[in-house]
Every structure is written in structure tokens, then in C-alpha cells.
Image (tube, rainbow, N blue to C red; front, side):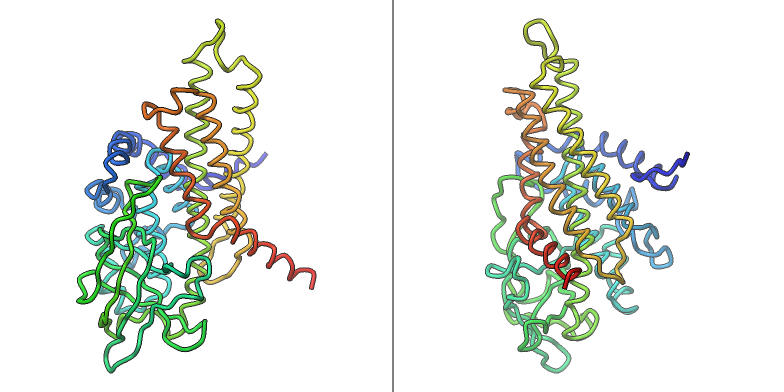
Length: 386
């Protein structure tokens, strides 16, 4: 019989999971409710991911200052810590996956020398800017432009729904550099650049402890050396990084579902009685718990199956889209079931399930809506029969 563990395929993965789980219970869980209610970003705790735990630069090679691990390791970190505070981990995902991982796989030696150590240490907080007020799922409809003028590109436009807006120091910004829809380029833009400004912080239903805001660019001069990859060549980089983004958003969903399953089962089995019996003895509660368990385990199995295949040099979009479609739906269903099992207590802020339910809803929107995932999957499947 094989001893292979899909969820922790090596001893290193197992140790990493145990470490972040224990650290999260001690340091992340106690602050989650407070920062959700105040709608503030816990910047000091966030920076400790880099300075104390070395959790920034997970997929960056050791010789470049990272830990040299794989997307499965990133998935483990995000799944485990999302059990405690999905909002904080959304900011982590924007920094680590949308900037660090993307930047590292597409930047040159000079760019790495100037920026990598700052974002891996946590000295700088980073993010990625792709969506716009009129271009979300329709990413090729972006209108932000970058025009070459000598040694600079002049950047103009507005980005919307940007995680780590307000608090970020540097962003990977996508902009049009030509007349065609696919003439998209990526730039490293520092928040201190003249003409760069943050819009109003969004007031959100969930993920409240993660800042979200528009970014505005008014004649921002970006040095030519801050062009990432080739001019007009960002589409491939962008689409490949969407795969790990969608997998790690699914990891957040699995973390939420696992935590809600744990909360509802403990409550029904050992805390709440009705008619002289614990709630777990009633068939209606058994259905909610059993279905939640089955869905959560199925989502996690798909998640880790896909995470093992992520490769920044290859395109395998359908599996990433599939787990992004499935896992957030599970998180919404399981978190709602937890509220139902726990009744009035589940609806109050004394227990974490109402917060986790609010947080879960973003995951079927951000990084590609459920509807976009359905369209993408069918598009890829059609090609097999034509």
C-alpha cells in the first residue's frame, strides 16, 4: 500500500502544514474578528510572514533569496491560514502570488536585484493591477495605456478592485502599449511615483481586513527598465499566472470550508443539545454535516491534484478553472450549512462562521467569476471534439 499523501506529498510539505497551522492558531486566529470589524489591515502581522516565517518568495529559488518550494507549498500555506483569517490571506495572495511569483518568473536579473529582496523580506507590500472599471472578466478591454517617450513610458488610466491598494508600495501593472487588443505590457510601478494615487478604500461585505481600492495613473513616468518581459508580450505571463491565482483562491475556499465543517461538527456533537440529545443525533443535522464533509473533501482532492500540475512555463487552464469554479461554491454551501446547524449562534459574531461565509462569497467573483470559469472550461473542452 502506498503511503502517498495527496495533501502533503513530502515530509517538507507535512512540516510546513504543521508549522503554519500552529502559528496561525496562535497569531492569526486571535486578531481576525477585531480587524474584520474595524475593517483595518493588520500590517505588522502581515510583515511577519516575511521577517519571521519566510513565507514570502515560496516559489523563488533559494539562490535568489526565496525558499525554493512549489505551488503545492503555496497552496498549503493559503489553505491553512485561511481557516483563521481569509482576508489577511487575500492580501498575502495578492503579494505572494500576484506579484512575487509572477514577477520572479518574468523579470530580468536587474529587476530582481532591485525589487525581489524588498518584497520577500516584507519591507515592501506588493500587488497586481489588471482589472478596470469597465474591464474585469473582459480583461482585453482594458484602456489603461503606456506610451513610450524616450527613456520612459507614460502611464495613464485607472485600475479597479486592487487588493493591497492603499497599503501597497509597488504594483505589477498591465497596460496597453499598442492598438490591438493583445498589445498588453506589464510594468513595475512604485506607489511613490508622481501621478500615482489611490482611490477611496472600498467598503465590502467580506474580506474586510484586506484593503481594496482603485489605482489612478496620471502621466506617470515609468522607466523603460521597469518593463517586465517584452513590450506587448504580457498576455502569456498574465494568463499563466491566472492559473496559480485561481488555484490559490480555491485554496482559500477549502480553508474556509474545512474550518466551517469543524465548527459545525464540534457544536453539534459536543456543545448544543435539543430534546435531551446532541444536535448531531438528528437526521436533518446529519445531512448538513455529511454533505459538507463530502463536498469539502472532494474540493480539497481536486485542489491538490491541480496544484501539483501548476507550471509557469506551461498552460493548463481548464483544471485551474475547474477548481476555481468548484471550491468557492463548496465554501459558500458549507459555510451556510454551518450557520444553519448552529442556528442563532451561527448568525452572531460570537462564532466565526458568519464572517467566513461573508468572506467566501468573494471567491466566486474575484480572479474570474463562476460564469467566466464555466465559459472557459467549455471553450477548452470543445477543442477536444473539433
